[in-house]
Length: 620
Image: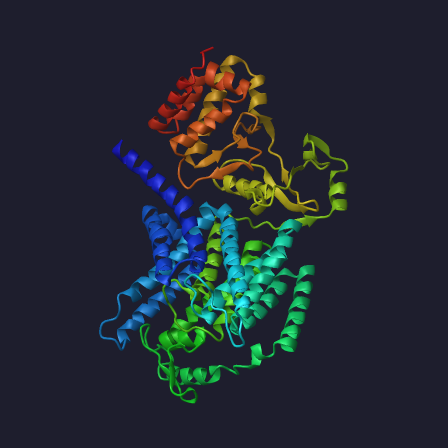
């Protein structure tokens, strides 16, 4: 009994951390630089709400670590970090800073946390990014207005309030969210979202220009080329045309933004860095080695970065450390290209390309605490790794959403039989070839249905349930319709709804079937399946005698067996249907409870019994 309580408590802790704490931690990591007073606050937010919870999650369930080790990006990072730590053996410092050992761990927790979050709570990924982008947009708009009002020649926008205190470093974060709004403009099919995203993109682009930094302009150019290459649609042509017009306008009206500061000593810095790299080309100078570059042409001004991420990696850990580092960049782009049918991979790989472009002329430190440089390297890589892990575990769809023109939709439905309809038209149709077409109406732009269309939820839930061994319809295609609706085509499961089957049976056979349904319901709960719309009309008794689920858009799969409150809520929903209530909770409740107890724990069964008794339903 004690071990069961301990396991129940462990499951509740795991669920709370992965479902609630990690999303908050990711949101703060993405947005807090805009409103915290200094970077130390960001560090505390990340350590307390993302890194430490992720480490605890891996300790609670070591099998999650095994899933993480199946990801090439995670393995490459571990190899890179291991070599960086090994390089401390030839460190010029007698007593290396212990913080150097923590940094790889915290960075690795970013990979692990993204993998856990995108597997168990992937429906929150788009809202989190959108919320962070809106925070960035509002702050940047306010700062941009203040900058324009007080503008004087030669001024560079830093970032206003918050922890952003350097125009070049600030431009990394501004460019990061500029890429996000560019991604939304390229991929959204909803006109209202497009009308909002285009001005947002213009504001973020103006903010990047206001920093006076040229590095993000190079990075954004590479990002636009990458995004058009992997998207290859009509908007890609418009994007290229817009880039050409923008570049021409910039050179025509503000050429000094490009030419005023010359090369900013980049060539001199790179030349000196290469000379230092040549001293220890294979093993590097050590992870904690100091790099001082003195510019003779700038009155002896001293810098501590080579202003190139690649040169920084070569200096600190040499060619041996450079190999896993360059592999991470190459694999991330390869994965984005391979999975370009999925919009989230387009976003993550575009952010990585932006980071590669920014790293050409900026940066140099290889492993740091959370700061602006994370936006151009570790965050994009962690997102790609997390998406890959979630896709491998079938919690992120592989199937692309295809656009279905009105004429093609009408032709598809021309000889179909309407199964279900509402005031707006057909909702479920049986097509001429026996397949089913289910239509989902568009939701308001600010609802969860706009971020994660119900057709995609339906398909994703079907995929995940099948991996759990629960029969569901076979998804054949996902479609976006011209009016903003979405649709899914699937092969139906053979059989009758459980409600239809019970109507045709006598009392003794009905008791046996309800007992089996009790077992099936307990299996759902023990596997973490919370089907909000569970009732006898959504459960099929298939031709082979097994149970299956239909109409599964309104379903969530939790990381652990359902807590007692959700099990009871599931039963309360079933009691809303008079015929279901009469069969399950009045006439044959003992059979239902007996079947449930055969799979679920004694405590969970007792809670269900207590709930039904509390409702004071008269016995038949």
